Length: 317
Image (tube, rainbow, N blue to C red; front, side, top):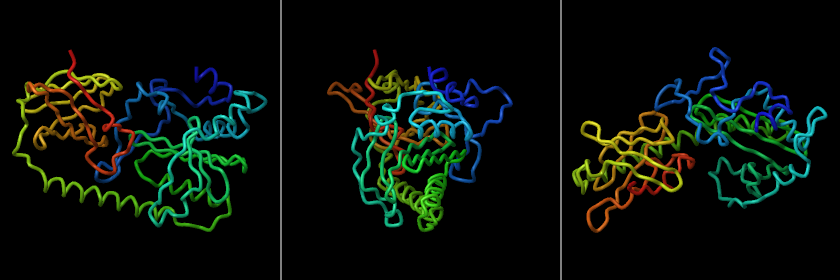
């Protein structure tokens, strides 16, 4: 549907809807992550089960055609891909987004209004309306910025897990708006270093407060088995050697070795290094059987999209 109703009419011939459509040897960027050290190649994300949230593979040339179509209310080269009224609906606020106080270096970015439309984030910046959306997979980060009243579109594609893409977006936007020059690269890099420092301090604090000698309440053999979350589906805890291993039915890259943390809590150490670790906590019924497993991200900087905190796994039949 996406290919025939959107990509082909716009002329996005270099864009496909999944990695399997890329032929061997094609000019495809490789994702890179720091993994706590120098930048290096990391595996491509497995997104077959979330194609709409990250399945499109494109080029800057094709994405420019996409932005031109957006800015011309669904039209390009004499072709109407969607009616202009649809663009107004896409860019109309649907969900208000609370506006907090950013760190002092980012105060110039604080909007007067912030909302979510249909697939677009909406806000103001220096007196103009912005229509934006970021993209993020393992080792790949991107940002699309539209300024409808200026007929301006900016896209940043990166193949590295660095916040530089945000700095580049604001820098280019400031240039086109004639705004005072701001060293966004240094500002955002400093904030990234502060976040890493916060993570390290948090790791130290939870290690110091840990009681690894206590628990778990049940032997590992009684914790193993299949568990189901109504939203996600199944996971399996398998006893492999002397520890449990977490296997996700829909996310093969998220295999994790469970390290006992304290009491009935375990730390899931993901085998894919650039996937965030999580805490798993078993809650028991009065009869000593497992009632549920809840999860929480380990580090404060963990991206919200991991959704660990939204999962409640119950024993499967």
